[in-house]
Image (cartoon, rainbow, N blue to C red; front, side, top):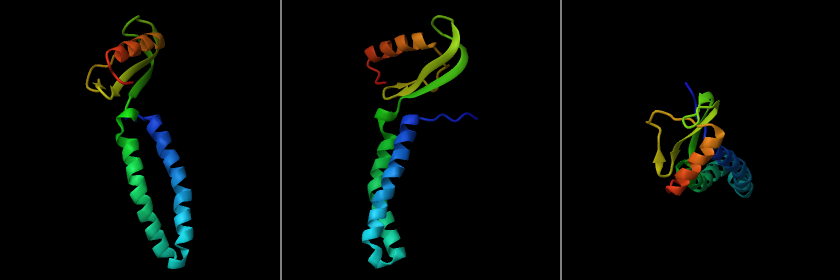
Length: 123
């Protein structure tokens, strides 16, 4: 089983986690007089109210949706060269996840990306 990772989304998610810690620590500090359990519950509710929307953007934003697949030792669909291959799987208005994959070498992939951008595909 192969796991595909959208590193842009993963990085934003990790950044979100780092930013949530000081915010929630500040909530705990100001709510300390209410007791540990109550302060923790209220802080988590505040965090949920804020970070629900941040997480929704990270995981559902079409701006972050371009997914590329990279494979080693492929034959380029355009020039026939054996090298590392790239293919765009999914973007905002582009979906080739069901199609037979066509990998391209780096140079041909750059040309194909320009062609797709000229056709209006948002990469």
